[in-house]
Amino acid sequence: MKKSMRKTKLSKVIMAFALLFASGALFAACGGGGGAEPAEETNDGAEAEAEAGIEAEAGIEAEAEAAGDNAVVVMTIEGYGDIEIELDREAAPITVDNFLNLVNEGFYDGLTFHRIILGFMIQGGDPAGTGAGPGSGNKIKGEFAKNGWDNPISHERGVISMARTDDPNSASCQFFITNVDAVFLDGQYAAFGRVISGMEVVDEISAVTTDVNDRPTTPVIIESIRVR
Image 1: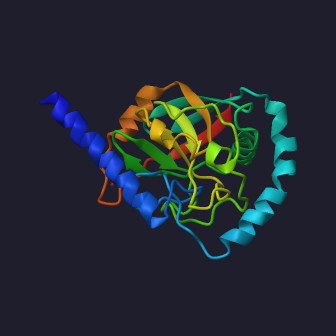
Image 2: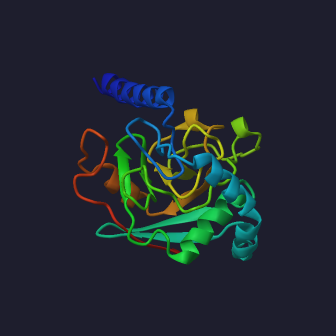
């Protein structure tokens, strides 16, 4: 019976992933329309934003580099507690620098986890809280194998990675944290760190009640993210 239930849950995740991939709405940088991947909706002018964002990468890197290759950030979730995440700049320097730049700006304070799938991941970081928001103003290079980047981080339980659209260089501000091993995502999304404390908080968030679009019926709010 338990084996059958596990197979059913896995089938649902794989089916959702397949539907999302087919629709072109992948785990997006700042979006997340329905599907099984943390995804972002495509907006008009995305290509122009991507070009501008890639040009800005050098500045982002210079600002965030001082944090070191293994900076730790503390994500405080209102009513749930803290999630500590160690970032891996060696594996994904552009992604880590972009994330730290947003953290230092206070960009994520007050935003939400807008898409939650039990047995898969929790996705947040969209200013609009819908998965189809405007992003941060920057689009960055996707640091994963299918985009020509050797990223050694596997999407195991507790890994943080960037959401994106079908454009491999569309990641901006949306991220997701896996609550199970999801190694089928390897090579397709830019993983850039892992939870080192507070995985029970991720699990608690993963279990909240959601609607048919995987949106929590009660908002899950990111109170703040700070470098430890």
